[in-house]
Length: 559
Image 1 (cartoon, rainbow, N blue to C red):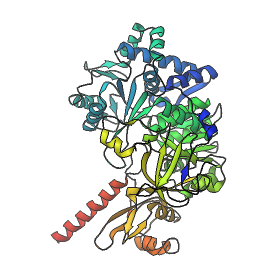
Image 2: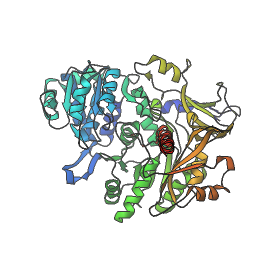
Image 3: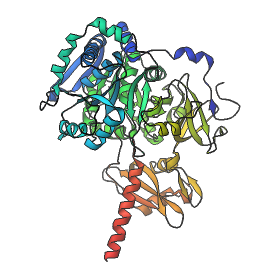
Image 4: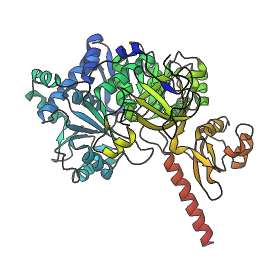
């Protein structure tokens, strides 16, 4: 049994070692093209109205990616050089992911909603030499912002527009790609022979639930095995159809969905940017049977399908995670659509999945837990002193093994803070483990509310709030209080046409949670502040509360 001596420590079984393979991202694409050459690997079908409609087989995806790899080499990109992509989920994004991996470059994904100062920080910190950019996104000129950012990024020497270049400060994609003719297939194979599983493949900047971004340096070994072993536990089958609205600039898109699809012979339907109506139409038209989405996306998707009268009954698997997943939401989706869930838990620094439930797990485990560690991954839960806690007790989640990042690129101190000398990655998340090694996440250690000396888990209150029929989504934070140190504040989204007062909420929670856990404050919002990967930024909710308090104090003083 992998759980050791009644404490929260999971040690991988000896026979799991053979499941972890020494492969590069290029090896994985080669294998998919060999096994399923004529099967669709990527299908863009939701954007005919915008002139984007294509289907590439796995063999075509491989061939096109190798052309991009040769063009990178022709541009002087060497092994270990950093190449940024600043765009939405376009076909070129996927080609750059695989092309960079083939030639030994390190991909640096950038969120297309970032602005010049933020982009300059990433380019400078990662030492990016080439940046591929969508010139315009949602009315904003990324091309102009890149020009501003480049002034603070001395390493940047090549700018490529995905599409047409607006001016002569960079080159258009088609013109740049033509340079591949200068590099032979033999030269690419020679370069590729020097790429190993332990080499860096991406620098993923953390998405910002705590504010300051750090660049997690991930390896081929980590991302390939995360994608492979995820697909295995999710029971994905050859020929499955998987719609992916997760952003490619996050591991949920470029690792879990993209590499998981490669490993399982699954057709991926990328969504350029999350638009719930397009996702719903794709599912209904293509009879998609696999969906990956964070909880906020699931809520929006159901609302869109209902508005348009679309049938989502083809869904068999729903992959979710990225934040604590409300049990009531899972039960509702299972009851309505019959979908089985695979719940993932992890973080960018772990490539990203640490634990995962399986769709064939018993309902109580499938609905409530985040599953067991992936094969070959070690995990434990520790108290503030670093001691392992007994089974069933709450502690900080740590992991060790093939999935852990090398460190934060260019940030030695942050790397030391996150990684112990013996290889343990501190996640900062709180959870509990049972005797079978299943993990339940309680929340972030820094999100724990301490009210009058009592520790309060926001997750417990959020689950209670979601039992109220008026509420469609809920997030709970601690806010300053002169008497108790902190008080409980609930931010909620209500169902259309519903209303709920703070007094009504408190009255109806009395028989669900202890009195001291009942929120003192209730705030109704239309949307939550989210990271690009769909995680709620709770520090922004606390800032919103503080801003409300300042406005109230100002109004009172003025009165």
